[in-house]
Image (cartoon, rainbow, N blue to C red; front, side):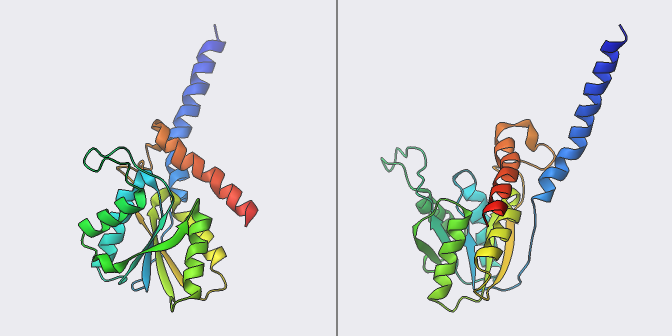
Length: 205
């Protein structure tokens, strides 16, 4: 009879500790490195979050942070479009979203080739830097992805003499909020999964 209340109290305590600690797990993944002006913005691919990333990039573009925007092609396609009778590639949807939010078409450059991860995207930018006068760039991504993105770009572009900033779309919408991420599958996929990816990247690079 004594054990049951103790078990209930122990479980309740663990739940309370988790609720208090979980926002810090999400917030630790979020970093920002501001650049007031840069040669370019680079929007990182992400099918589920492409709208929030492209809209953030469009806002920075309209604020005059950078005159051009790089995007990449992750080879992924969206759901069926009845109007177009096809599954539009996300790289096309990103361009449309940028233009719809005030970015001039000539300001958008799709870096050549396909990418399969953040490291691929950093390598594409490194290759672009070899053939241009790129000296500064602001990486635009989602909040939960910002720490790994900045860490990866810093490592892969370390010998390019490029100033790297990072800006992120605020949590909410497609990206779970810091205090409630653990309440849904996408939150575990994005936040908890990001810790696994960060560990892998740190071991590999």
